[in-house]
Image (cartoon, rainbow, N blue to C red; front, top):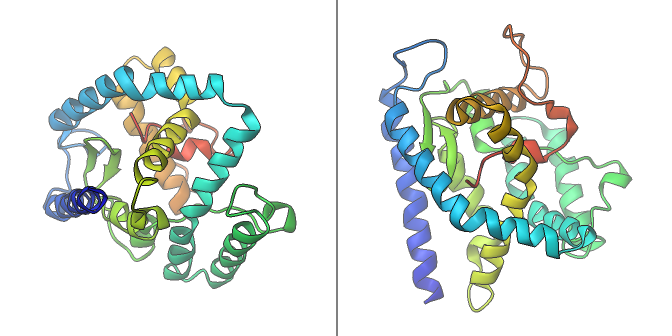
Length: 257
């Protein structure tokens, strides 16, 4: 059963990548500076995700935050962050940032050993900072255009350029190869942990935004621009929706909705 589930999940990731490649032909949106030619379909999937989130994921995340002591939640967050850090290492090197790549490698090894599998972040205090690199950023460094904005079922916001990174981040995460009885609870914990990290961000969105879909889209695109330019994006004439220097959680905003 576990192997069947993994097979279905791999197929789903492959379909997302094919969707991204197929969308490369659509690069010019009908209105304004935001490239969202797929807006009707995007809004539909946004509504579906919001409905599922409100019915299942958000209540579980709220209960998780209520019932779990903060130090435990921090360790869980550290664990999943460390498991996903192989993707950061890979893309640091692919972007030609060799010094960052070696630092990222050292960070992963330190936290995986001294940090007991990543439960504790001891690397930061040793001068090995956390970075956020992914294949979408790598494609941008290689000169790939952003392409159309897309809102995918289950996954959430992405672009034509960022979508193949879903597959890369998945296959570089050791959890992708997990089988047996631990597969389902660990996967569920990962989803709930991710959603718990953005509870406050989504609350602010719901309170402040006249159009939550547009707010989500602009926040995502600004965040991606910020990451691609390593925190120094070119001036675009308007303020960032969020202060992205405040922490890592904003980078996952609205990823699970």
